[in-house]
Image (cartoon, one colour):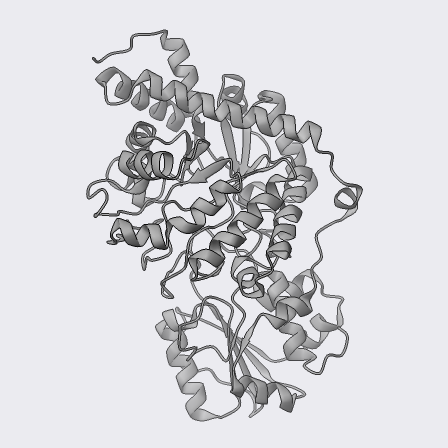
Length: 510
């Protein structure tokens, strides 16, 4: 049976409840205010929308004034992927470091701190934690966002992070179902293929998602990856077999299924964003993350395309009503929990969370060469900073020791760091690195082994001198060939821990 059988205005209301656009600017635009007043279900905030916590709170208050039941979502993972600290770098450890520390109570506390900050800012949903098992060291989009390579450990920490975050009244959204860890492509730019049998997925990828669901996760985000042994035609976001079969039936998830951003090539490369929106709803998604810079005209186009899908019979009215109902229940639930869970005085008074950098430093992987280098404690050394093109999820947020020195320029650490000769390089730079003297050299990059220009530069420096220390603030190769020190994260906090290790290796106070 095809065609719209019910009230078209109600049908449009259901469609609007499932849409979650982004927008340009730091204040709520008039077109989006009107959409919220007309029943738009959610808004997604990105780094470009945020100047300060106070400005963000004013923005979320204006969203809530337009629609008190709107979901206000943000992509805050508490590590390399940060929106609250997009301009300064994150003061949190990040998942890979938490997995290495392997203290689930500590991970739960980190999730709780993220939750209190989001509560202060007025956000109700965060797309975290990253629950992927990073089984491929060449993964260009997950890496240090993952708690690790062991499914059980990833599950324990994912569940702990969910519990900590949701204890504050903010909803968690583990991602990217059914697992984006075994890929070598970025789904922002292409559609990765994970050609694994269901048995392998059950033993590895699904383990942490099951743990997060058991911990009470209120939503789950999909991935734009193709699993040909389960559904050879549709990426997970558009696959009823993955969403209905694996997530709903096998794992028993009853919460909101959120699509990853539909402007990513893995989802809309063939169908376009409106077509992908209709297909995602039909497959089982409830809330559609549309993108970062959406417009009123684009939402009109999506709404018309979804309505046409109902008229054609490829999407049912019942499916839309089900999706809208889940989104409304999520919004109402977070509103009620916000009213019943007061913000603690400590969270209200704290400008940003503080964590022990020594504990972070202890999680670093340090090889014998690095230990000898640090024991020698050179009074001065040159620094070579290696910048690569970051994936879209991370974006251009400040990173590592460079972020820490910029955020706290008055500190002894920053002063000592500024006194060191600094050379910058990227893949666009050609030629050898020329250093002013024969002092020791510290090379700092991310995912060093994945970038030919970094490998070549490091090899050349090592051939020229023996006192080269290579730091990888990303996910290193298994053999650690280009990582004398591997920090497993490039947040500002990880940068501070690295600064303390390099500038004050004997433990003098910074």
